[in-house]
Image (tube, rainbow, N blue to C red; front, top):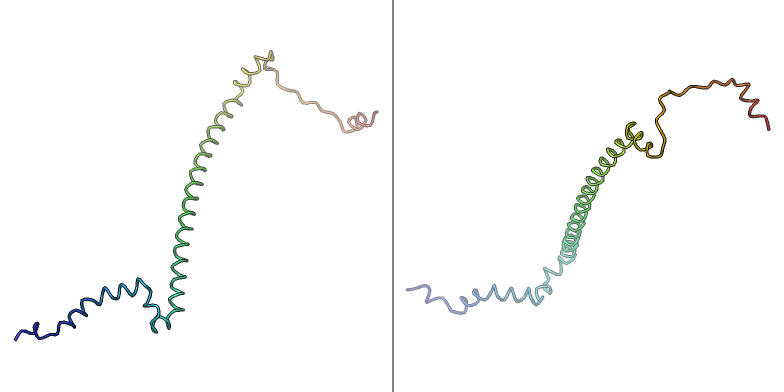
Length: 131
């Protein structure tokens, strides 16, 4: 005898319909009313909270990484600007450049070194006390 023919058809149909029925129960929410699910509801809520926290942490991490990248690029740009300005300042502060710039004003560079003037303390106090 063939065992396939002896098996009742209803049992075979139940096995085939188990998955779609379970899917329908999940989609319409009737599985939430079962005792096992209700008994574990605090744990399920805890897991849902952890999932929300994990998602939020991921967004926060992405934002922090983007800010670090933006800050790093700004730092590189400012560093290059600093180097450019410093080299320009060094060029304009050189003695030959200053001498060329003041020659346009009618001034000329002194070739005589400056002399130090020595004044005694007594003379300095006399000069300060005179009205």
